[in-house]
Image (cartoon, rainbow, N blue to C red):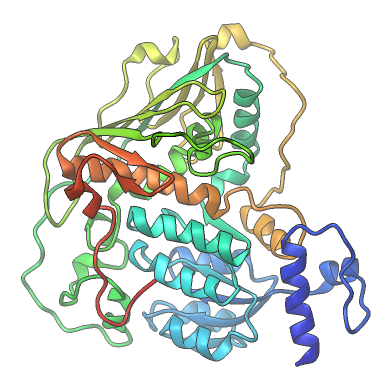
Length: 449
């Protein structure tokens, strides 16, 4: 037990980025620990997307696997028979917390926050799938908890680790396309109005339905909700735009340094008046249970230090920007375009894992400055290494939280029916009390952050 606590203290100390020497009670060197020691990992959500995330960290010590659907998770359990099985992550954390250093959360959106925050409050590093949360408020709590607990975090927008995404951001920051004031995001998928099912079929064997619901409002089981269709219901997911928004908007969010509105640079003066983000949205329809077929949201961001104000327009479910913004490039089904005064950075890939500079003839043969960002190769490996004190996670909750807030504010504005003004420092809508209530929702008894 003494050796285990010593190892955990080292993880925490090295995660803080300390360059000094850490003395181990068993006299092992820091380098030896980092090279040879494995993290104790707990998995929350072991099937579907969780199966891939589990495989990505399987080189560590998988000590516990938790999933509410025993039958769907059975194949994953068979692959890792030494990991203890659980259906309730709360029980897993209660019984196994001394053996767990880090947790991977791959559940539906509505349980991301309760599982991740519970783990972080115990000092566990967390990898959580995108979108980080189902509500704006939850995203804010995730970011704040990560900062307070000083844990290493990573949101699962895996394109963040790609060469293309990092190179595109480097070139944007270097002024390759001039001053940046505008971005356009368009996503092909849409949803559509649907009423809550009236039938109440029996819960399938092995499915812990009450645990699957977690903090969401109670409703009877129905196959229309799972295994993957939960995304289109407001009770559980964030629609097609929320599902892919944290992928497709990633490049633009970083290139424009929008994160500075949530994370001001050290020494930056706090504005006398809130530097609000103004968001307006138009939709094909509003439905209480589900997301619209089409949505257009316009975000007006204030200046960030020396950076000028910027407008971001999000088109979801079919609408697209004017073809002129592509500077001669053919229109695509998906896109993330950051416009500058001397050109544009454009990705037609939903995950931002490829890009071009526009107009193409102007940048033919362009090489650009030397790389400045690290190249980890793997999103998961970068997080694991950061947990061990090696480098930093590129999509930690200090970025993933604000990016999720931005995406979800489009839904809030659509429900509000008017332009909302959101203060990223206080986490409040300052011009509409009713819209402020849309930033979160009550949890069922027994669930909390």
